[in-house]
Image (tube, helix red, strand yellow):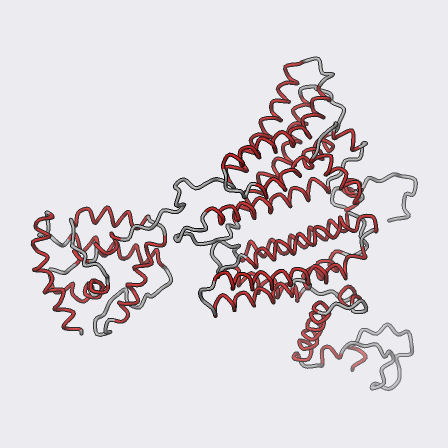
Length: 360
Length: 210
């Protein structure tokens, strides 16, 4: 095959390396100069290219930026919530994927889109689509140091940095577009294209700031879990009929384990509160987990359906508990008002004691 | 009978003694040896390569490049993926698996596009094997997190130092093997993505919080 047609010029196929190799034909020095002129834009970036666009810069600047925003966003979160006892550190790896979508869309898809728009609007500019892509790729290089400065937890400084980054990266891309559109006769279309570019650029900077480096809504950062409903719902579950004793008694055993003597409040609000507590964060399940281990300590003579389940599936556990509580609640006809509930408390207490005495 | 089973390209006279092979190059030993031997040979090769990665010598570079295999990288990837999977907020096994293999592929492609002389699988093999110090660091971090409680700052400082050392070790080992294959005026362009790849994996190791 190599010696078949020596005179015919064959174009490299789309899947071969040599097709893309001409876009990787840069030296270290050239890349360094391009990054420098992108961080400090003084003149038309595309004139510096001298007709040699490269894809090395856009690709690796985009990848570096993905990870630098995710990492610095994570650090910023950590710095802001450090003092909060409810905050558990998590690396938030899923942010990398959303950052990647936004950045690669901006660097690779958007310039192609702009080129198509300009082509079909019959706007002739002096540069090709790949050159525009190169400009867009290098324009993001200012965001890498900016993302480190975004860790500073002062909102005013962060917004200043947003404006600064927008101006710098916008200049890298905007100057070539502006110069290219100067010769266009239809001014409306030219301004529309320029406006599109500006909006996309602003959208990217603001989007970065708001998604990765947002200050928490309340000063303490995290909403602490609501503890009381979990304890309260134990008390009214005291059985009226002895059939329930085996199932419910282990739950009731937790009552002395709980520190504050909980006065059984209205059982009707317990239901919506119980539903609420299901929707709370996982921390709510922890007192139940602690309670589970205490159930485990209760003598095995009492067959508790939840007893063998110790740690793992918290949500299913929680849902099962809620269902159980609700069905027991439905079987309590007498407790209809808080006064009645309070009045019955001393009557219930000896029943609480009795199963304990039977097991203890 | 042995002659008929082996692939012999001899043009010599096929008549003669049955038990005297004409060609000395016949690989039917592979079929005769016990399975344990075959597996042990491969395992020894993999172990040998690990040793060359952990203590990189110049003369050892031929071994990894010439006889590449992907068993070592696969093993390391699965170990790290399994450990990181249970960490909260960290990458799931699938995410790490994709990151590892796609990352190696992209770094290799980048090297080739810049005009590097290394072949695709050789480079993926080297990148995979050179993660070994970071895997050691991850195991160390896990042991530290399990065995000690409290003293957050001390534990974190220990893990940070170990991860940093492992990162430097991995990068230097990979540079030893691959660094020379890129053209001289683009060496930094070829090395930077490799360092970025190991940096990302070090980040995943240091943020692993059990």
